[in-house]
Image: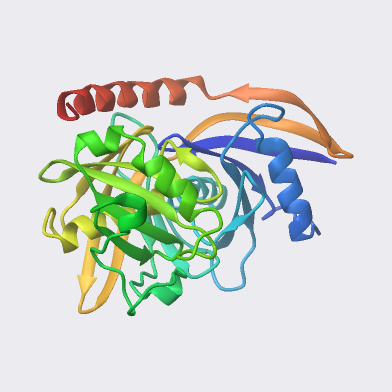
Length: 325
């Protein structure tokens, strides 16, 4: 079977887009998972964090399904949604759309670049819940706000939130950020453990200055990633709740893959977040898949987009170097 794929990334979190909007595939979820593992393997495949399947929707302009590189399906992916927002807007010739995801229909739109001429999209991150049952998480009480895991991470205080995929977030200093606590903690809570039966995304956050934060994330099903859109969104929300940043004001969120902007909104006890950042195409490729093997051909590069993003990364890294000392 021949398939056309577009390699794209949001903040260095990279995916392949597979268009089922125009050419639906009568595949089982097992077949989707197997294709994802085959193509996304960074040693034997083309390499990526996952595949974004863009499909028709009965309730929105289109639908996004996200399969991680390990074959698991994610309920939401903010960086991936920006990539789908671009693809769908260009495909349908619109600036604003509504995209169906596993848990919600979300607003997306093309917006002003955050740097140079980089294609930039704003996507809605919701629904948001602090109820531990929605992660799910086994804990005493209905929420887990600024609490510790003494046996796993000493006195670090974590907040658990579903956006709607599960996240646990702690604000740390640079010494902790550069240490190995995040790796050992993350691997534990994404293995056999008593807290998170389905695993969890783990973010360590450094406050750089007012309105600027750095987020490093161990992503469930992926491991350490250049960036996780929902993690950056959830981290922004937590910093606002802790009065480190302000609701309704843009926060610049730096990550190993670059930077985005997030705006946290609060209406009574309800929250939502706008995630604003790049949707960069790397290349388009035709693959021929047969018997758990594939051959790639007709590869077309998007070199100008890659160069624009590299320049933003260079500036972002220079800023981080001056702050993370």
